[in-house]
Amino acid sequence: MAGRSADFRALLEALSGAGVDFILIGGVAAAAHGSARATFDVDVVYERSTANVERLVRALTSLRPYLRGAPPGLPFTFDVGTVTRGLNFTLDTTLGALDLLGEVVGGGTFHELAPFTVQLDLFGRWCRVVTLDKLITLKRAAGRPKDHEALAELEALRDVLGQDPPLRW
Amino acid sequence: MYTRRMREPDVTSLSPDPVVQAYKRDVDQTLLARNLALTPTERLEQLQRFVDFVADLRAAPRQTEHDEHGGQKR
Image 1 (cartoon, rainbow over the protein chains, first blue to last red):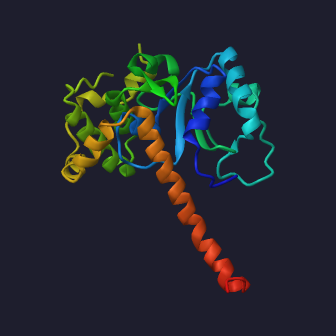
Image 2 (cartoon, each protein chain N blue to C red):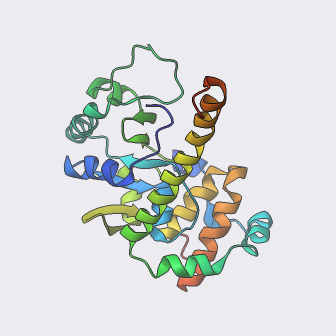
């Protein structure tokens, strides 16, 4: 399972189909906005209510989620208790790498990030995606050197779109 | 009141990062323009094709190595 390339459509359909409340962020969100950079995993901020965590677990259990990079055999069970006790999970699944974030630096929780999202039609389903401006904010807040090129492209993309730079907090 | 959000940097107040600005000069605008002509789904389908291609490439050397050492190639 490790190293399998992500199946973006299937992962998003698994989440959307189960009614999970989530916000698409990261490289796939950037690609949806028009970025030409590659990414190999799906990053989402999920809503932390018990009902939504139950939907999340129901959606992913059959995909055999496991901690990415962890040695095999760890007693990791992806269930409501695990998700509730934890916050952010970097997972490998049978559909590829999936990062589940209860909170993201620069964006906070699902509810804090929700005002900075747009609904995009992805593979025939409406999907909540972080706005390009907020994506830039998140990248800047992360402060990782590896993001410099990605940030440059996102800012260039914003310039092309002719948007004002309302980098709201 | 001191909140978590207050501890986080207010990125809106940051001046443009000179490193990012330097990289920005080299961004291929034609690729962006081409992507913007696609629908969001088409953009992700394009990304999927690339990711799958990379996965195939990564698998290829292992196959070659197997062929060379396993004596099954010819």
